[in-house]
Amino acid sequence: MKNKSETITRFQLTYMIIQTQVGVGLLSLPYSVNQAAGSDGWISVIIAGVIIQVLILMLWGLGRRFPDKTIFGIAELVAGKTIGKLIGFAYVVYGIAVCTLILILYLYILQHWVLNSTPRWVLLIIMISTCWFLVKDRVRIIARFYMFVMVLVPFLIFFTIMAFPNVMEYRYLLPVGASGIMSILKGAHAVLISMLGFEMLLLLFPYVQANDRQILKSVCIASGFTTILYLYLVFISFVVFSPREIKLVPEPILYMLKAITFQIVERIDLLFIAIWIVVVGTSFISYVLFAAKGMQHILKKKNHSKMLYIIFPIAFVGSLIPQTDFQIASFSKIVEYSSYFFIVVVPVILLLLSMVQSKLRNRRAR
Image 1: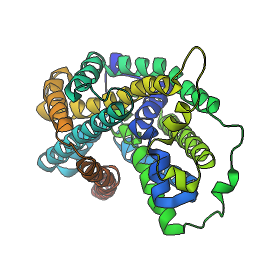
Image 2: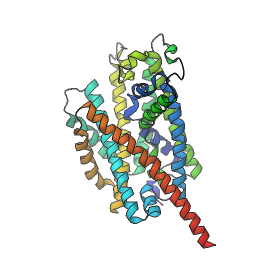
Image 3: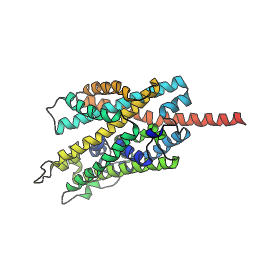
Image 4: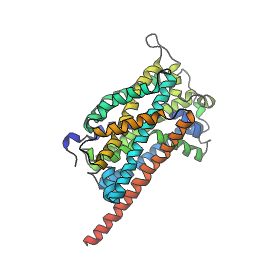
């Protein structure tokens, strides 16, 4: 059991999951889901939200069997020390890969919209050095920071409401279901990838000072909130831009905001990006923490702060390697499909193994 200075409340768990899920994919989600599902992309968001709730239930089922263990401890307990350490190391690599992808997409947006002449390494150092001071601290401190910056999320919604044109064309959503079930499911895949972050439950479960049902409720509420937020952003993008237009705008939310000006603030889109950077930072911190805690467990260190000297340089160098859109897309696909392995395949196998082992123990006890 973690000591009290490391524990977080169920409300802090909710905020941590939200801040991890609402991340770098926020701006490009309407475009990505439209590429796969067309005007039925909003249905894909709902389907993805339901699937995530099912996955949360499965991860929770694994966590409640070992309430004092993270995924790294569970893997060693269920699969044995050798295989368990290999699984734990694979999760560390996954965490670092997601961190790297977040930095890559963060660079892409900033260089295309704001700081196109600023060297990439400068932007990376700003993000990494800022996050370093927080992620080296205890989980409780990180959770408190997430609660504080949660007030910025409503501003994202407020800015998009300001961007509403006088007339929105709801007929752009018709006919409903015309894209076909397979296209809608492909769109759900795009949404699912953008909503990654709920798997932090694999790390945070033993840190939460609450019972099993409260933990499940907190994570479900967090994921439900993210689903509604993404559904809202996809919906307004689809009714503002025509089906032809949205195929040409990779970041439709920013294009909407760029079209409006005020006497005091000329570029609302820049304010939106400023808040978005904070949201990206929290998502980045979560995955760094995930990888650092994993390395701490594998190497049996007292704290995870020293692990940052390994993780940050790898993420820094890795995010500088992709140069072209094709390279970025290729790396993104690798991370996307590997996420299914670490979020679905491995937890399911560990859950089934633990159930079999539990039944065998019960039979021997008789």
